[in-house]
Length: 294
Ligand SMILES: NC(=O)c1ccc[n+]([C@@H]2O[C@H](COP(=O)([O-])OP(=O)(O)OC[C@H]3O[C@@H](n4cnc5c(N)ncnc54)[C@H](OP(=O)(O)O)[C@@H]3O)[C@@H](O)[C@H]2O)c1
Image (cartoon, rainbow, N blue to C red; front, side, top):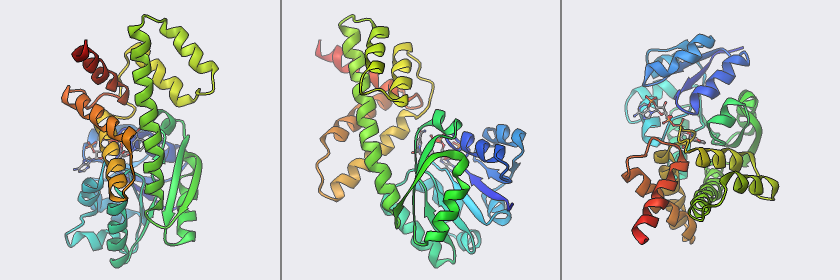
């Protein structure tokens, strides 16, 4: 089996790369913070010294970067290194970037003689560790998209082909709109129950017994009740995604009042110094609003 590249060994990239290695995929990885590669190295991955080394060793390179700007850094976009990196290569973008960025980078990669597939995922660190992500795939060539779908099988419960770039990222933003609104509403409901001195264990039991039950709702309800803000999806990343959704809505003239309210709350949570905490820390911004109103 040919060696595959993986760049971006972060909250999501680390368990994803680990699942590929454990499934027997020969992997070469790179991360800006080298120490984050230690677990995948111990599992058998080769650790490169530079992103260029990953492109030299692997035809297919998966990127799980935070945003478009960091993708540009590792691709060398805007420098002569870009063509050297991507020509003859298949670049797979599994991070969440704006649809416009994705379409532009696809065009540059194709012009430089490479191929590009979008494969953003739904599901946070726990589903990533369990190989239970849901991938959305988009690309110009159906057989290339199918090749990526087969490659990322160990990471996914399901993968859904959406059409040409950037339809997978647009799908991801639509799904994020629902997920972010839902978890923010859950945090508001926990605060509401708390302020009414309701028993939160019973609150969780009612939710679990009812039609709104889901693995995500269970996990986030438990974190909210336990005040466990260990990161699954960081507040700063959720704010970034909230802005991507709001921008896409504005560009297309779509009303998005729920995500606009969420953007304000995640912004306030960052201002409270909680940017590196899990998204459930948004409850602190809700509590601060309560304190201001009382
Ligand atoms: N967490 C989630 O629940 C979740 C779920 C679905 C999708 N996503 C998306 O998946 C992507 C990754 O998220 P994550 O939670 O894994 O974030 P993360 O832990 O912050 O990882 C982001 C990666 O980008 C790298 N990076 C950032 N800026 C860089 C730069 N200037 N140069 C080189 N590398 C840079 C980081 O390197 P360092 O280690 O050196 O910082 C890290 O490897 C994001 O687009 C996010 O929106 C996240």
